[in-house]
Image (cartoon, rainbow, N blue to C red; front, side, top):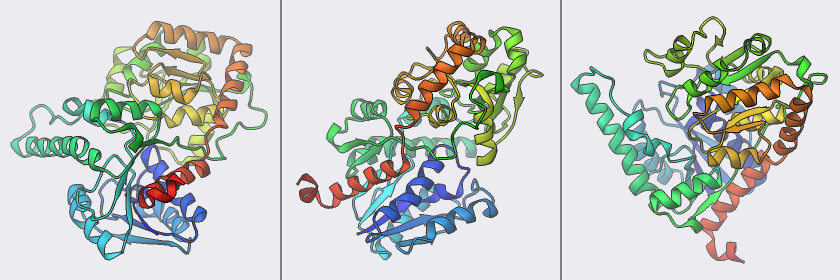
Length: 394
């Protein structure tokens, strides 16, 4: 079989969906050496990392004898997905196309399996895909076209897919309930965890941890203002002992995160930095006393699993996906906007070495349930089920 994969995320900063795409592209060719894998990329996309950052990833994935990497340059995502991609699928003799990034190809000419991580893009379409206030006619037209494309993708494209992969049972329920997709066509496959997310020797007690940690997601569903409001209610002595670090923040003119810092008077107490490399990310996790992750919506929640694997307790919101992924191992579980309860839970964990150690141990045990090799194998089984349904049933 020749499996085509929309692998554009191999070239982008490695968090969330890009990290997922990179891991399955690394593992699947080794698990099926008799299959071919054709990976389609776009070097011309404006939000790629610098070539020096992604070339090593491409070389690692392309080192498999059964992998071909095909570049198609285009600065328009829709044209790449709906014009260039189906043409290349036909030319390369692809049998099945996997679209792992919340998109699909309407006329691929072969079975299409999209990964739909969640439906937040559709749910928050008006909020997140609105033109900035005062935008000109051209800008407003761009946002209207984008909203129409997203709506069409979710409402018309995904229901026609041969099968759908999603990343949690919570997301599966949303796909079934909100898009009317049959449950037997949606396959939950959890993400994995890399081996370098682990505690440092000698840094498995509260006394050796140096800071608190939060990621810089700045959208409504990431809820940075809720997490910062909770942090502002933690006693000052604990905030000084474990100062909050925010990493992965992309500055923009209107920012929920920066506005919340100013409103709460935390500008001088909280450090904010942009994307960091994998080594720095792991180090930040390993030295953190707690991770704040109070999202209003998630499909999976990578940081929770990574923090638990590093022996770092998590303050998590109680939304379905995060409750599922944490599996009862989160140190603090509260409603996303319940700042008082979140602060009380954070205070309890940071004030008690015994409570902290218990939470850290629970997280370490839970993290062992997530494997990239197992995740990749389950993807391959979905492909087999689509291409050989009779054989899959036996």
